[in-house]
Amino acid sequence: MKSRYRWFVVGTFFFFMLLHQSDKLLIGTLTPNIMATFGISMTQMGAVSTGALIVGALFYPLWGYLYDRFARAKLLALASLLWGATTWLNAIAPTYRAFLVTRASTGIDDSSYPGIYSLIADYFSPNKRGRVYGLLQLSMPLGFLTGMILALALRDTIGWRAVFYITGTLGVLLAVVIFFGVKEPKRGGSEPELAGVEMSTTYRFSWPVARGLFKKRTLRLLFLQGFFGVFPWNVISFWFFTYLEKERGYEGTALLVTMAAAVLVLALGYPVGGALGDALFKRTPSGRAIVSTIGVLTGAVLMALTLSVPAENQTLFLILLAATAFFIPFSSPNVVSIVSDVTLPEVRSTAISIQYLIESAGAAMAPLLAGFIADRTSLGTAILGINTTAWLICGVIYIAVIFLVPRDIATLRGEMQERAEYERSLTAEAAPS
Image (cartoon, rainbow, N blue to C red; front, side, top):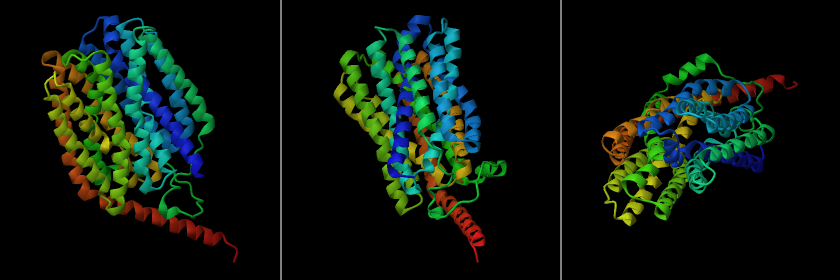
C-alpha cells in the first residue's frame, strides 16, 4: 500500500472522528440552552448523555463482530450515515422524553471506532501504530473544541436544534467519502513476520479465537481498567464547561480562552503519548504501559492541585489546568496499541470492541453520577472525586500490565511467525519442480 494513500486514509478517518466528536460533545456546551428548552434538572440532563453511552455500549459487540467478518470500510461508511440520520432525529425532538430517546439512538454509531483502529493496524507496522492512533485521537479534544466554538457562536442565534442539523449533514457527506474513497487492506498485512510473504490463506473471525481473548492476562487487566478509565473524560467533556460558568464565575472571553487553551494542550497529549509509547516500545515491550502509568498518576495529582486553586486566581488555575490536560490522554493511544500488540488480526475489532464495551459500561454512569453528586454538593466535588479515584485505580492496573505484557506480545509474535512459515511452505509446494 502506497504511503501517500495510507495517509489519505488516516486523514479521512481523522476528519470523520473530528466532526463526529464535535457532534457528540457539543451537547456539553449546549446543555444550558437544552435545559432551558425542556425545563429539566442537572440529573435529568446527565441522563441524556448516559442513555447514549448505554446504547453505544450495547452495540460494541455487534460492530466488533461485523468488522471482523465483513469489509470494515463499508461498515464505517454506514456508521457515518447513521450518525447523520440520528442527529437529525435528535434535532426535531419536541419533548424531553423524545429528546432522551433520540439522543440515545445517536449511541449506535458512537461504538463504530474499533473498525477504524483495526483497519489502521493493517496499514501500519506495530512500532508506528501508537503515533498514528495518537494522531487520530487528537481529533477528540479538537472535536470538543470545534463543537464548543460552533455551539457558542450559534446557540443564541440559530438555536441548538439548527446546530444539530449542521453536524448531522456533515455525517452524511462523510459517509459518501468513506464509501468511495477507503480501500480494505488485507488483515494482518502489516505484521513484520508477514512482510514479503504471499498470503494465500484468509483469516477470519472465529468464536474459539474470540473466546481466547479472555485468556490473555494483559487483556483482562486492560478490560478492568477500561471500566474506570473513561469516567474522567466523560465527566470533563460533559460538565466542565458548566462548572466553569456556575462555580468559578467564568463568562465570555475568559470562559472561551480557558477551555480553548486546556483543550489544545489536551490535544497535544495524544500524539505525544502515542509517540512516547512507540519510542519506549522499541526498547521494551512494556514501554506503552509505562507511559500510560505516568499519564494517569500525574493527571490525578495535577487535577487535585488545579481544583484547589481559588476562583479568583484564574492565571494559576489555567496553568495547572493545562498541565493536567497534557498528561490526561497519554494512556489512550497506548491502550489501543497494546490491544493490537497482543491480539490476532482477525479478532482485533472484537478485542477493541470488548475494551470499549467495558469502558462504556463504566462511563455510562459518569455524567449521571456527577450530576447526582453535584445536586447534593457541587460540580467541583463531583469532578475531583470521580476523576482522581478513577486515575489512581488505573495507575495500579497499568503497573501490573508492565510486568505481564511482554509474555503476551511474545506469544502473538510466535503465532505470526508460524503463519509466515506455513504460507512459505504453501508457496514452496505450489512452485514447479
